[in-house]
Image 1 (tube, rainbow, N blue to C red):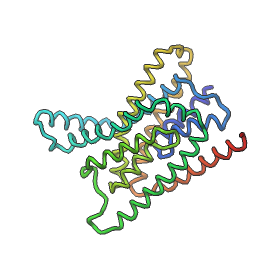
Image 2: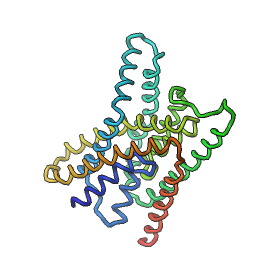
Image 3: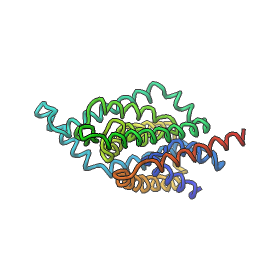
Image 4: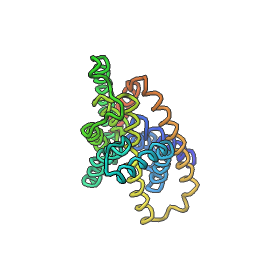
Length: 278
């Protein structure tokens, strides 16, 4: 039991931020291995592990954004770049929040279908491949079309990335993959697209974790699982922080094609397993 908690915690933490879909892995991997579906308590604690990881990693960014917002409130101006970026993050959060609230039953039904998760992993692979191809064409274009810094983010850029995050609620569609791909498709610099993706993940992951925690307290019965839950939480926390650090460094100069290939392989494996078990 402890090994399973460690393995799934490491898996959740790593795949939450790498562009390979944590939800797809947590649907497919237990199903492929014949393990029982993790309960609400375990899901909640590993989710909070990744939540704390992303907050801890970007706390300086969020402190700067909040100081910029306070300056904007005092001066009644959005001239401060950090105040403006915070507004754009709020805008980009809205599509995912609305989709989660209005289509909750639909998305929950998808999580009970491993075949759907496998198919959506193939969609993630296609999204990553198309985004990389578009970014390569743009980066080789004349100077006027060169990739833009995060300071040049527009409201339409933010909304596009936010819509990508809403689609990524589907199991198998990577949240980080879809949002980074959307940023690249809009012409952002590679590191800018990744950083905006991770900053954008904070409120949506925090909100989802709070909802799960509320459900957990309402259902109760989790105290006896404390040792297993702690193992999963710590594993997700550590692997989540490491995966953020790795991807930010990786994406500066390297393409996302290896992650696309990985999604294809896992998606095909899931579909083949479904056919053989069918």
